[in-house]
Length: 135
Image 1 (cartoon, one colour):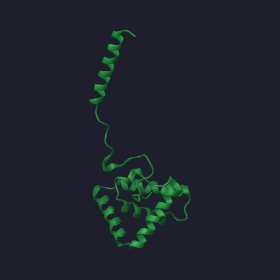
Image 2 (cartoon, rainbow, N blue to C red):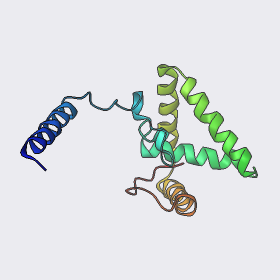
Image 3 (cartoon, helix red, strand yellow):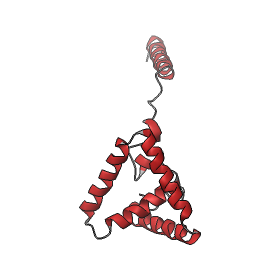
Image 4 (cartoon, rainbow, N blue to C red):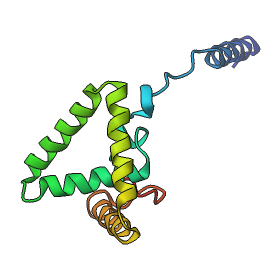
């Protein structure tokens, strides 16, 4: 390779590298930290682990005896309902979850966490970080 080609290649690499450094940063996730990828990732940024535990318990009760397709449709409907809520309604919903979680005994809370952990282990290969994030 000639010296001029090496110099041209080095100049091109420098220009491309500097352009990448000044490029716009990646877009942040949508409001509330929602993500569409991963198991339960969509709601992970919107709810505390305790709120997710309460939603998990509600979902288990509501879907008892349903087929897998019915359970999937139920969860999808719940997500759509939540996403359609106003910020005030979301705050009320979250406050209700918090209130109901706090009203449980420590043993009831531990039972729900154990069921959620077992569900994750069976369906998703475990959990991330042990934060007890529900479905």
